[in-house]
Amino acid sequence: MFNKRIKIKELLTADKVNFDATVMGWVRTFRNNQFIALNDGSTNNNLQIVTGLGVFDEKILKRLTTGACIKVTGEIIASLGKGQKVELKAATIEILGDSDAEKFPLQPKKHSLEFLREIAHLRFRTNTFSAIFRVRHSLAFAVHKFFNDKGFVYLHTPIITASDAEGAGEMFRVTTLPLDGSALKNEDGSINYKDDFFGRSTNLTVSGQLEGELAAMAFSDIYTFGPTFRAENSNTTRHLAEFWMIEPEVAFNDLEDNMNLAEEFIRYIIKYAMEQNKEDLEFLAQRLTEEENQKPLVERSEMSLLDKLNFVVNNDFERLTYTEAIEILRESNHNKKKKFNYLIDGWGVDLQSEHERYLVEKHFKKPVILTNYPKDIKSFYMRLNDDGKTVAAMDILAPGIGEIVGGSQREERLDKLTQRMSEMHIPEEELNWYLDTRRFGACPHAGFGLGFERLVQFVTGMGNIRDVIPFPRYPKSAEF
Ligand code: ATP
Ligand code: MN
Image 1 (tube, rainbow, N blue to C red):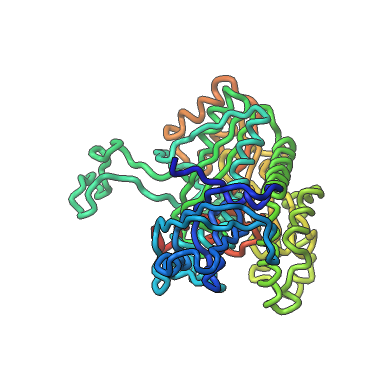
Image 2 (image 1 turned 90 degrees about the vertical axis):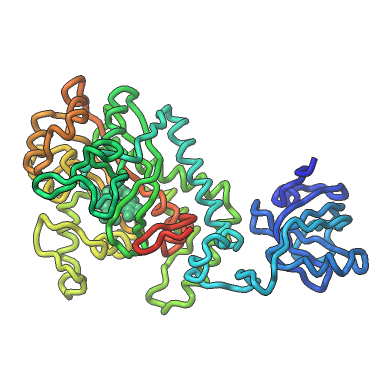
């Protein structure tokens, strides 16, 4: 069999030597015409392969260039050199794929993250990105494990939707109509969708929540984990046009249950990655420390990446109401000295990311859950509190990232819900299917949306969200 290989991670962690093995992977470096550093993506640690002087044909050795793909058989022996416990003494070397050293863009040296973003198709082969995407994998796996262990049903909500009522963000249109102006028009000049693929106007989903609520009214506990799309022109380090969202929706949960679930969930998946990806996270922590050391002292973070993750796993998040947060912000020296771009002088305004960061990074120095926001700055489906002014919403804010979770207890009372909809000019006909859940066996329920990439950013310490998704989509960029 061709593929009777052993993964490098397994070889490096085995405690036996003197056995034959086949390995395959990509050459990171070949030095002194003798030592190959081979990587197969199972770990950032390379396997040292010793070719032995005079054993192999010059022609083969010349093709052992950075980036080349090879198959090697030989004996695993205890290594005499420093830096590794075992090495492979090569008996046969087969070149599976050559790599022209002159043209291969990844040289064995440090490349900037910006440069690597331009060659995202090759960046998996760097230590930084292989660590990031192995951690991303573990986090994704832990998401499923967490909910599966709790008996949640994984619900696949549609990617193409006809509802644009949720208002979570600008939507991408989905259409098969011609773009040359020949599409059928109504009398008022607007597009007539009669001939469009679905016979109506459709978009890429911004959230699976509304559909998730329908299923929660049958299974009690569901979650979604899928791609969502926002056509917002946000050129920030925290926004993507295509990102993955996790949205649990739970019948019989109120706002407090919802917060407890979110906290438990975040702690669980971070802890899982810390156990499964110890080496990768140590590598990323080291990378971040080096990056931080380039900054002026005052801007450096007080905690290392691993300290920060441990802190989150072991400490409760700070919970306070929007009203309390406004009070803290208004009374802060930052506000009095006019250091905010948007000064806080009254109740009711939406918090900007500078305010969120102040609360999390300066005031509390830990993740914060803000609750009970003014109804006018939140969505129609959030449950109206008894004060008539606020809704049972909760946002979780994380250090360095800002908002990582947005959630709420949902409005289960039909009359209150339809009243909010009419105040917000959302036509009932469009959401009749949604309103049915309130007509037939409604119950208190709650849920939240967690942006997966923001979580990956938090765990890997990466500053830019474009570096934690394999092929980022953002304004003016949809390469690969
Ligand atoms: P923000 O204010 O940061 O734009 P939002 O209020 O628009 O967030 P929600 O609509 O509540 O966010 O979405 C739920 C979660 O999805 C957010 O808490 C965040 O983690 C994530 N999220 C939202 N928009 C984006 C985006 N453009 N790219 C990546 N993640 C996002
Ligand atoms: Mn947004």
